[in-house]
Length: 264
Image (cartoon, rainbow, N blue to C red; front, side, top):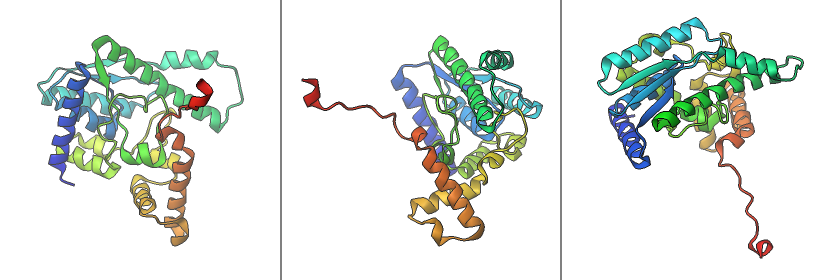
């Protein structure tokens, strides 16, 4: 990958899209992770206003610290208008949780509540986007968005632009190194932070991003699980299963196309 040229291309693409859309800047959720750090930096490089939102919901302290350090780094390294707001959504989430019908706690319930956190953050992002005529910048990468569908539909998947969605996770790390993103962010264990504990993306997915990238490329090349054995077969099957069950997130919303003869 020609890292510097890719960075320049993405920044130019962001500027062009913003100007075409007649909006005034970008708003992004900062989590303390690698994807939001890289995406926010690329947005800052456009020279247009950037609003960074911290939206903790029972957030781990180390994640919040990394987010704050990154925002401070942005403000110190770019001359474009960069602002930040922290909105603690913990009480909002707890109120909604308390209002929901009581049910037995299961993995499915916990996942539904985790997705609710992401959707509360999306709603908050669009509140500020509407106030300032900003675009919501998405932080999903290629293996998450188009490989395993590891995001919340109408949560962190609810965005206006996806600057890094054509980059594998490993490529996002290369760009982070090129941009000089804080080392603690580059070394942090990837996590979505939606469960209020320290579980990582790998814990949830059953494979790390290097493995999933390999599986994605292997599947795109036409390989099947029967061609592999051991851990490779296991990872390929994990990828294939997630890719299959999450297709509803990755394809356009289906529209019922009524035959013309029924409309006359």
